[in-house]
Length: 279
Ligand SMILES: Cc1ncc(COP(=O)(O)O)c(C=O)c1O
Image 1 (cartoon, rainbow, N blue to C red):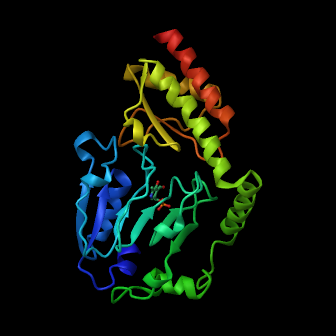
Image 2 (cartoon, rainbow, N blue to C red; image 1 turned 45 degrees about the vertical axis):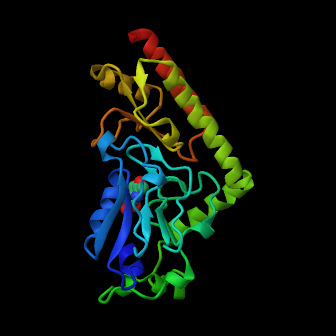
Image 3 (tube, rainbow, N blue to C red; image 1 turned 120 degrees about the vertical axis):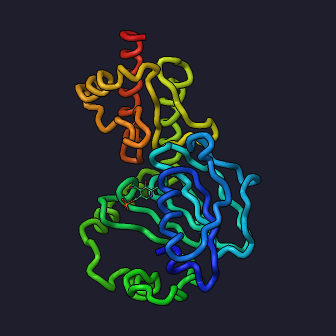
């Protein structure tokens, strides 16, 4: 929907490539126009994000797209790119609501609900008004942001249950002190795990320090032959879904807003136990 709505007669769009979700966005955009990859971290297996001074931005691009948190690689960008008059588009699926952001800096923010918002099936899209209404010819009605904007997101029958739950989550986050409070909790959680990963050589974090995601923390065991036993022990303690994505292997702790500090503490305790036994 981003290229359909945002190309607005322009020939190309700029994309940053930091991993699996960037690649998927680029693949889709190529169906509608030319894509200029401003920078890529493929050279180091997507373990970092290229800094903005390494980006080759095109001043005539329709927009600049990036993925501030690569869910699979665990690479997060904590600064907001400066793109001048070219609208900035962000896939915030896996870090929205994890910390405060300045929405005014973005042309479009989109995010699947299923991480920090609510049940799968809802997608949040925040679009700057002036970018709406110039879709590429042939765009289906449902793919046009104007349709959803003009109809308060009820042009079709929306997934009402998912939206209701999202509303409850928003209220809960406010009651907990809002996104500033969530950020502090998320920093605490992430540091618990990263501090241990830094202190041990039994486990390893593949991600560059300045891009370590607070939401998705991939790590590997020094001896991959122990992976299955590690996962079995995790499961026995109620620590589940720790197997890394099939495309990268290893482990991945996804510690979204709903994961309490205690959950991360228990994981780190188990990792220490496992190291004591096998290290
Ligand atoms: C960053 C990012 N973008 C896009 C998606 C795709 O979301 P969906 O499966 O809702 O299309 C995901 C994962 O679920 C993701 O983590």
